[in-house]
Image (cartoon, rainbow, N blue to C red; front, side, top):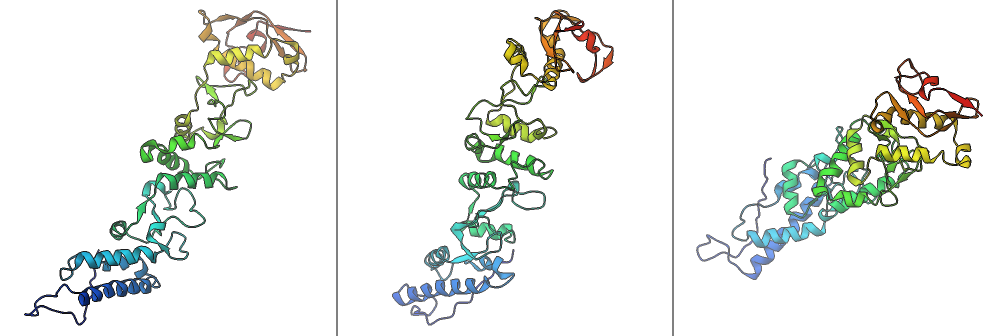
Length: 352
């Protein structure tokens, strides 16, 4: 970056040998006028398509006749009150203190910020170059702060086109957004995120971990039936999305134990009233889960004892399984993989 310099020409009061400028009221007034002239020039530069992003290169960084501190402090004071920076949306000029630097980690591959700017404009325009931005920092420009990020996230969640709630966000968006929210500000975003309703449930709603416990939709890799009264993360939202799953785990989403899931399934069949409400689809989900997790709860890999378990048949009637489930492998069926034929899963069943 090439730094520019102004030529200051005025009727200064000099010393006897005219080799220096005296410290006197007249000269101080002239240097105050230098500050006014500099800011006036900056405001004119701000109307130019290129110079509006380069005016800071003229900012005095070296001594000016021994009056460096006074002149620079005056210029800085005047610049802080003037609207001299262009926001990201290229709208009206803003004061330096009103805008924030958007770090590369907060951008998509395309260079756009991960979250939309505020209605009043918070992000600085992309056209400002790195070294120029360093000078602006010395003039009061700040980096994106924790409060700025949490406000942008809240704004996103309130939007009909929310990126956090999107079923299929751009491929690179969620990994970058989750990584930033997890790692920025020393993890300072996490306590804020715990309060926000951005975790998608199987029911279709979005919720917060502070309302009630939320669980991942699988236990030991097996899909959990959705009718057990558990608040489960919607399965499709974390498939092939490692960073989204990490973010959910960081805010408090946990994995429910296989033992607890099995217990809840059996409780569904304790009374006649609850059994009547179980659909065929739910019965299949229950049996599938029990089948693929039964070896964890028996000493024999081939046989496990159940209490009598009424299930819903394809005809909509109750079917009662025997006490023994024989784990043979003879066909591939609705239980997911090569598995026992329907008749051998529970050793046969009878209608009633």
